[in-house]
Image (cartoon, rainbow, N blue to C red; front, top):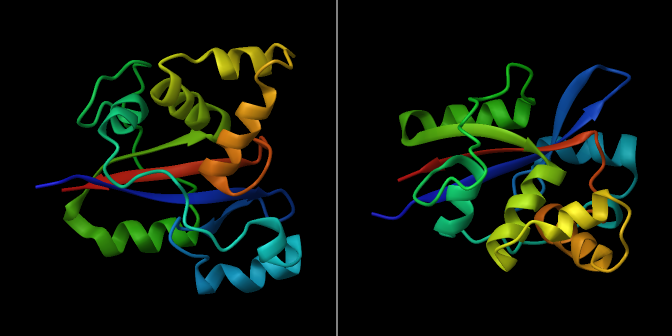
Length: 165
């Protein structure tokens, strides 16, 4: 039996002091559409209606993210569903019920570090970008876009994820 990943991109709404689910990596969730339009403009421009290139059964990535079905190279263990999870995340976790496991969340920068490691077997892309290096900055931006649909790893974004078998 295969293992799949489920993910929600969340943004922190500083006015409301809550996390808001933007999309669930298969489509923009209908309940989030009005929030996106009201607060961030046209979601096709800001987030995009795309299927992201994070594969459903990328066991090397699953291991790097949470030690699931692969090598736990960063030592990140599942942290559980965030206590302040968005409504979208909460609904999706609830709908998966006991099939969902190893719930966790990471900043976009952390998630992309794992993605870069899996792709290149190195986290130099993120380290160079964070230290101000320009050599691989475009690659880093490309990975952020691939992982989130946006072009920079804003501190107010996180990815909540979990797995099923």
